[in-house]
Length: 587
Image 1 (tube, rainbow, N blue to C red):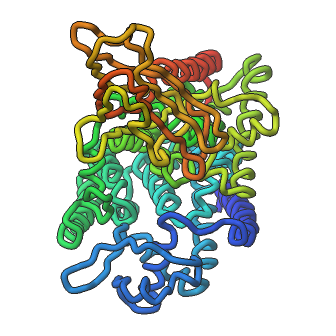
Image 2 (image 1 turned 30 degrees about the vertical axis):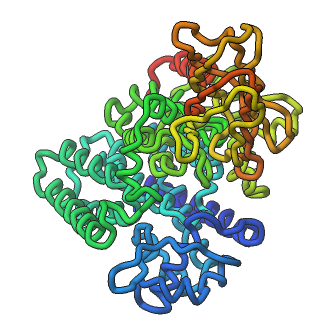
C-alpha cells in the first residue's frame, strides 16, 4: 500500500471513529430528553412487526400497544386498511426493513446506534468529497468539521427518518457517477467499473422504497449516469435498468395497495395528488424562499455555515467546472419540487426535512470556499465570517439537543433574542402560510341594522406561523348613514400574551357608494412562533349601524414586507459571494 493510500485510510478511519464516538456518546442523553414524535414511532412499530411477527400487518401491534416499549400513551394508527382486514403502514417500507436487524438486537437504542454508524459513514463521505473537489485534505477536513456537527444535518442522526440513509446513498452515488475519487489524479478518469456500476444500481434502487419523495432524485441520478457514461452502454444500462425496475415495482405495489404512487395519505387523499393539486399564486415563491430563509424552519437559519457553500460556488466552478456544480443538483431539485408541492409550511419537523437528502453534497461548496479564499479577504473577512457561522451552527445543534422543544415549537432565533435581549424576528424573513375562513353552511356572514354584536368569533387559529399578513375580505353595506360611522370592527389577538395584533374599523366612508361594497385589506404582524400552544383568535363585530354582508376571509402573507427581507438577505449573501470570489485557486 502506497504512502498516499495509507494516509487516506488513516484519515478516514480516524474521522469515522471520532464522529461515531461523539454520536454514540450523545445517544443516552437523547433517549432521556427527546420524546419520540411524528412518524418515528410508526417506523419503529413496523420494524417491531417485522422482527416479532414476520409481517407488515400492524393491526395487532397497534391494538396490543406494542409501541409502549418506545412511545408512551396512545399512538394514532398510520395505516391503510386492506379488504382482507390487514393494516398496512402509510409510510414507505424501506426504512422499517433496513432498521429491523438493529431493532432486533437492541430495540430503539439499537436503531439509534445504527443511525450513528450511518452518520459516521456520511461524515467520512463528506470529508472525501471535500478533499476530491479541492485536492487538499485540509479543505476536506474543514468541510467535515463544518457539516458533521452542525445543525440541521447533525440533528437528523438522532431522528428515525429516512433522511440520513437517503443522504448517504445520494452522496456516495454522486461520487461514483461523477468519479470524483479520480479528481485527485492527473490522469483522465477511467470508466465506472462493472462491479461499481452494479453497486450504484443497487443502492439507487433503494431510494423510492425509503421515501417516494426520492423518486425524482432517482430519475436525476439515472439521467446523470446516462449523460456522463454514454459511451459505456453497459454501465448506464445496468444502473438505469435496475433502478427503473425497482421504481416500477414500487409504483405497482403502491397503486395496488394504496391507490396512489406512494403510501402517504392526507385527509383529502393521496399526498402526491393533494400537494400538486393545491398550487397557489404565492405558494411557489414562498416555498422557494422559505425553505432556505424562513426564521423558523429555514436551512440557513438552522445551519448558517451553509451560507459558505454558496460563497464557494465560484470557486467550485473554477476548480471542477460543470461537474462541480452538478453536485448541487440534488438539493436544488428537491428544493424546487418541495416548493411546488405544498409551497412552504411549518410542520412537525426540524428545519427543512424534505431538503436534507441533498444537504451533505453542499460540503463541496464549503471545501471549495476554504481552498479558494486568498489574500486579504481570507485574512480579514472569510475566516472570521466562517468561524462565526460555524459557531452559530454548532450552537444551534446544542440548543436543540438540550431543548428539543425549540426545534418543533419555536426557533433558535428566540433563544438568541432571550440571550441578547435584541428583537431579531422583525429583521428576518418569515414566509408564513395562507388560510381561508368561510361561514358554516353559507356564502357570507350577515348582520342586520339595530343588532350590534359578534358576527364571527374564530376558534383557535393554529395554522398561521410567524410572519407579516394581510386579512382580505369584501363588505357590502345597505342603508344611508353618516360617513364617519363605524360599521364593522376586526380584532386579532394572541393567546400567548393577549396583546392585540390587529384592530381595524370599517366606516361608512370606506364603502364605494356606486356598488355599496368595500374591498378590505388589513395588514398585521404575527410575532409568535409557537402556533400550537399559543394560537391567535379573530373576532368580527357589527355595530348595528346598518345591514352588513361580509364575504369569506383570506389571511395571506403580505408580499411587500415578506419579500423585502428575503431580497435583503439574498443581497447580503450575493455580496459576500462576489467579494470573496477572489482569484483563480490552484489545485
